[in-house]
Length: 547
Image (tube, rainbow, N blue to C red):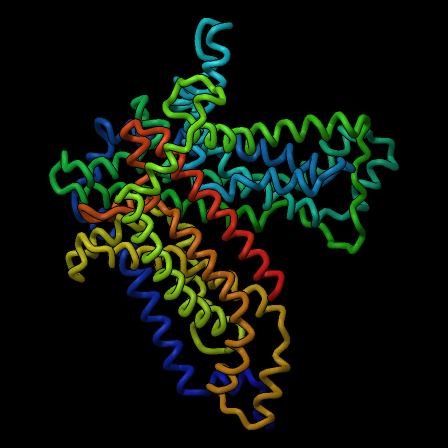
């Protein structure tokens, strides 16, 4: 019998790659599995789960579930409408509209919350403009309805991508058959398109609801001032205020509940992905729905998308340019003082230095380890690869509040309590999956011919892996590391819970300014962070295209 000598077979037999596989498994067990295990153990063994059913925590649990479910349903509805208009019609300017519709993904939710307070806060531009005519504000954004709306707004792009991908897989022949049978556009959508999209709609609803369940920034900035608390804000209050005995234990109980809800949600997504109507894929291109009055529909769609995305950012800029909330918008009142204040303040400089240091560290570590994991998963047949993939990708489904609680519990055992190193560990845990995902996708579509050529030329397994497989992964790995850098430098949830006394990050600095009522300064710093973030995203996009 001839022994297999393919590059992947030989890579499997290399002892040095076996050592690498072991090191990667140890990393995942220590940095990912151990903190989550501590959340589960402390939550189950602390004997305090019963406290979650009483008082403020019980109400916060109900608020979390309610806001997650309602925001998930609203996000799917918004996504469905935009997908059908932008992706399934002959609407003019669809490319630009698509970018606008997906732009909330580029703005951190807590900065989005600050932007909308500039429109519908007590001194917001729209409320102030209409108060004289209506005798009161149009809508006060603070409270449950504001939390639900903003959670939906910042999560509907995820549902958009899922539903759009499902729409692209629908065979054009099915809609064409409906049209040939005399069905009008509305009936075709109702009887053919929407039933085929239903599994994607349900899956995206679960994904969005699970993600929104543990969001911290929006409920804290929009809900807490009106007395509307969620599990994430209650956990933060317990840990930061010390108003309860052993707050970390109670936070672990909250983390356990959230983790169980996430697990149930992910199980539901997995089940839904296996169900639904099965259709045979074809290469036919779906025919866009021809709209009557295309110009009018394009204008209405552009107005709706702009109102949801561009208008809040303009309000944020105006907040940053006015000396105080409620000041009339005139040329005389426009000032750069807020920008000057934040750029000259010591806490901004400290926050920028800390955030940059942590983000660069997380990007480097996640980039190296994520590249190694992604390359091992796609270019070798080492044992345990599927388990390694499942563990390394698990943090994508774990909310930041659970990650932070896990490392709070681990801190006393590793001597990192009240240390910035603890935040770095949590960042690596949360973001290494971004690099794995970025590296894995292009490598799976790349032929193994180059490794085969290296092996024929006499290269050993480790050298073929290092000089060919890893080099192929480097462009995508660089883009993934930049994505980690961008995400970490604007992060709020983890750093808010783990930040040691006297330290500062950009996200926490903005959060504290807003909490303290320094709205102009918070808006100015938010504008700076958003502009830098958009510039960095442009750099990532160029790098991905170049790769």
